[in-house]
Length: 579
Image 1 (cartoon, rainbow, N blue to C red):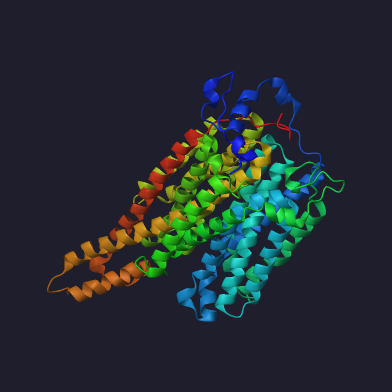
Image 2: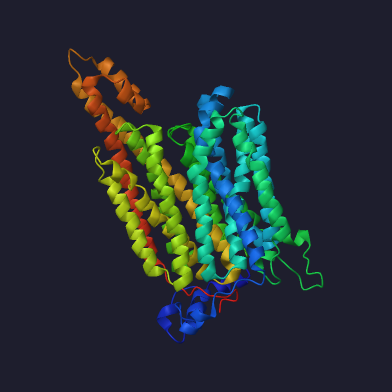
């Protein structure tokens, strides 16, 4: 194979000024270190102020606002179905397949999201953002007008393709128009709106499900809102000349590149193998053990497909493709490697924790949904404060390494607090249970993306951002899957061992097995209908099952903190030229 520019870019170089800095690192890392110190070099630079792109502040704020709206809607659509499922199942009489409504969106979003970065380098950010919004609008429209479950699932899948693009391309485009120092604050704002969508999705879905217009309006109301975002993007998003976000340009007068030439630049083999890998992996992770039993041939086929396609993807990206769709060679950079795994472990532990703390509250402490909602609400404010606060800190100081380690440590302490929780925990402590770890995780998510972008030349920021989103999506799905497996296995084992101890002439084996069956299927049975003599035992079994999941979250959060320690701090430049 002829050595490409990509290959030479990533080969190790030796820095004449300080050999230890560049030995064994990619060339662009060595060049960055040789060129400049990674921290602020003088007070003069700080007094220069942060230069924004050539566009006016009004235009910039409109663009950022429209992309934040898109990110908010994409996140909202992810969780809005949580309170709609029972109503949809009743209308379509499809309770056994209802989980596909949530899975379809997650599956398509995570599968196609990593492709947007590199493809937008070829075709331009603006066309890809427009297409993503159109997919999202079409998907929501299909959902709202669907006449059966599988039409609704198809609409969710289409909306997920658009939602994944809207989220990642908004972040990528911000890096095209805002310097890294200011970019930190804008990333915090992006994370704020994404977190807001996640937080209130269930509430909005519940409100619509109880309204006279029904659950369909929960999807249809998103269509005009996304259309507003789309129109603003079409009118105001004009990237400056020479920007990587314009896509491929030629040296001709018009600067246009033929569509055929653009299509030739796409890494088709890499894209196909990546999509196959993510699709098989996400399907096995999200449905394995539930809709698809672990011992079934379908699950085994998915595992084989995941391994083969993943191996093929790595081989294609390393040895065949000259312009990889997801350049995994960047993982030789310790900052990108550390930040990627920090995102992976953080999402794995954070999402799982957010799912199973309410399970603990309902099954062990018998809290009502409204009471759980009140205890979850402060989590949104801590996440918002962590995201925007981290962005503001980086904008003001240009630093992030020490800040990152401290607040990721706070995330670990928060996870430990959950693990040590007792059933008689006071009410006020319940309210601060989730905000502490999620404050730390929101700082981690915001800082690590900027750390990854700062570690590579500006022209590679889109691909680097795609790597970050790929690790996030797979981490969250795998975390919930592993957490669910731990919970189910521990619960079934504890129930059998504890309940069968009561076997006697008074309580037959068949009677006790029926109790185990009902208790394993519903935590409501434990508090409402279970025999009094065994109720405390059943609650204790649920506590043990939840604690096994919390222990997993705590361990994984430590791995996230260790991964953050691998990251190297680079300079956050104050101009688009990175000066």
